[in-house]
View (cartoon, rainbow, N blue to C red):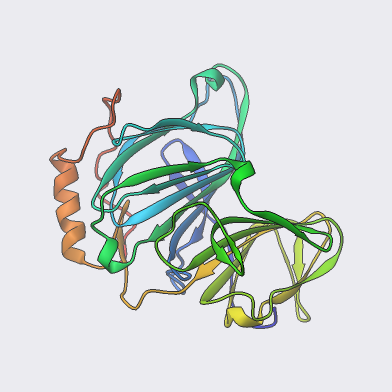
Length: 295
């Protein structure tokens, strides 16, 4: 993987009562293919009186992907879905013209010690689908395509890779692949990836001829077609990327769009509480004054 363009470390960010490591965006790199936002949650050891409680909040113009390594989260949304996601499964929520959801520690874990660890990812929608009807899909861990290459286990979490296709219903050409190495080896993906590509090291070490890279680093390739690297035994990495969109994407808080005007409309709509409600929820996260944004 000698064609590395950028190397980034996780940067800390707060989401309510939870500290995360932000992987994307960076000032130098705002998106990787259609991926516009990636947070690494935890690992956090939580006591019996500590719980994840993210009150209802809105999204537009994107799909969210939740993937846990440890712990569990109850997802409730304005479509009426109420489901607990556990490690290895995928929650895929497409906001389109607008959806609201909450994320909380499940009832059965709220009074015991627990661990929270996972990834939360935003994938922008193609321009012609930004205003589509929202939907939600849950895919169990055993339903994701998995295979071996030498001493490595591969899993296709979302998108397409060669002749394999995840059951997650994506809306553009993309991939998110988990690789777990059981011995020191070379991973050769030469001419097997497409578009833009990033590599996140969850644990272990990735090596090139020039350098060694460790946990919590993200590497961005200059050319996904030339992606080849060495990996140490016990490492777990995530490859993600795909074809970028021709239009720029703007982000304000939880809103993603190719139009600044659409984002302004969404802000006013949330302030007026005109988004659909999450059944059984009465709280909501107010629109931040100083929100992460791109303009």
